[in-house]
Figure 1 (cartoon, rainbow, N blue to C red):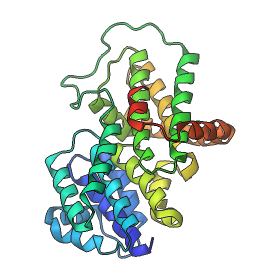
Figure 2 (cartoon, rainbow, N blue to C red; figure 1 turned 90 degrees about the vertical axis):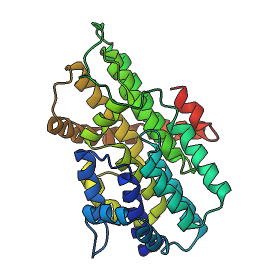
Figure 3 (tube, rainbow, N blue to C red; figure 1 turned 180 degrees about the vertical axis):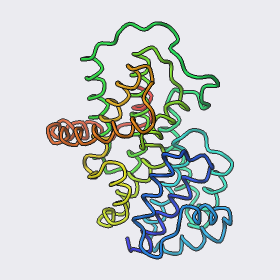
Length: 316
């Protein structure tokens, strides 16, 4: 992929993330990290939002950079995943995807197949769409969870996410998010909290691994190939300080689980700055563990080849 095409890919990904208008402050900070990876003269996030408001002209101009069917298909796949990963597609997101499909000139069968596969995975997470209307409190006094069992739960989900990242099918990236959301759900429930999709997405966004940012990171790293380090450097530094493609799925999921364990065990008293700091430290620890567990991650990836990703997410 050429540099102009890579730049267009990132800008369209950012437009997909902004299409529903509900980017958290934490996610906004991380998205700005992507902008730092774009070559000069780079747009600001505000300019990208303004381009999205102007709509047709911005998308039509960006897609001209793609010269192959694979680039066009991969771009649509990534943007569909970003829009669908945080729940049902909103009218703004649907407009964006419809316009993108038209401008990319993709066949209807390709679009239908991509959409159905993405929704089969992202729609399988068993949480309500809306955040809780009242502050979340424990429903009942919960027995103290077994630390060893929770550690095994975290490790199991981290290995699964790492294995998914090794699959050649880029749509496997979409399945990592349900794995992570389900992990947070299980940890919260073990501590007596009944979590829904809205609360979990807010939690992910606060610590800097929100829906939009993860989808962009995973897809862009896969689609950009050797250019990923240049274009994603700002995001990688903002998230972990030294993130690598091979460690992202395992390390992010493991660190996320450990943060959730401390957060819910402590009654949700940690603030956003404390959570982000804790996550950063645990990411460094998780990246160290990744080398030790690489054989298990590879075996997990081999076992997942050919798996039904939607069924996998539903069966977690």
